[in-house]
Image (cartoon, rainbow, N blue to C red; front, side, top):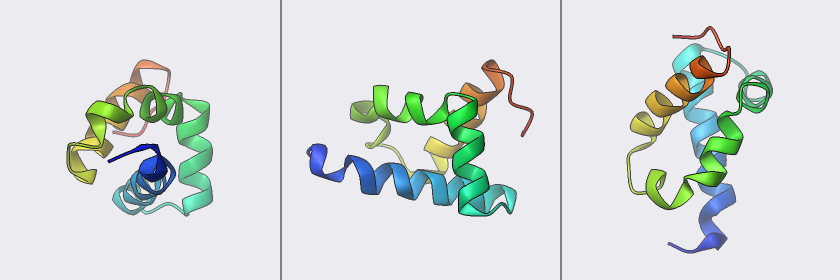
Amino acid sequence: MGKDYKIPYINACIRGFAKRFKLSVKTAFEYLYHYKGIDFLVEFYEIEHLQSIDDAVDDLIVCCGNNGGTLR
């Protein structure tokens, strides 16, 4: 998987996060952006894209929590 798939993958993770917490995609993006989840997905794309979206969402919960997020 090359960088051509990075944006669709990040989009899928945002949508998965939104679904998990019953948020709008916009609200999920804003939360992930604010609490560094988007930065996490970009920085660790090479590792994260090898996992399921559910696993990536689990990692986003931890990452955001480490940066002040409160969704668990």
